[in-house]
Image (cartoon, rainbow, N blue to C red; front, side, top):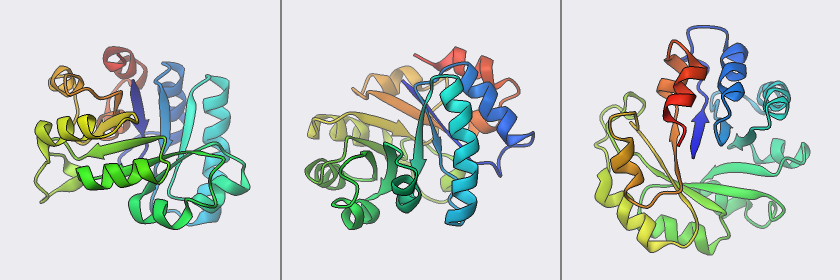
Length: 193
């Protein structure tokens, strides 16, 4: 199950057109990451992206902006562990994913009611330059430790996808290639398992 993660600053073409083309190819979900936007700008963009996702019947996962998700009554939100710890009681009506970087964080996320975890970064990636990847043993340990679904993130591509899936993940997240590939629809079709 593919989750396309956005990062409009990586996108060399029209961002909303790219989102449209990704959504038309029907990945499992699209995560609107855009960490640099203030709440108002993020909410405006989320409205536009939600319309595209709804038209294409693709799940939209908001990222980081808990107040925006609550105000928009949006049901899916991705948070860091500190955010999950801070907001867990306020967001009980949402399916919340937690970004985790260790088995202990994954176990805590599960205990705090996360619907799933995104574990990474698995492979070397330009988005985490200077930070060594955690690797497949890390991913296997997370999958074995928790009962909730695990999605892998970080440097995942066509050449390492089978190894990644072999760890027991529910799915995987791809940002850089989704934002830079020449044909977004073909990219999703080729990697969406």
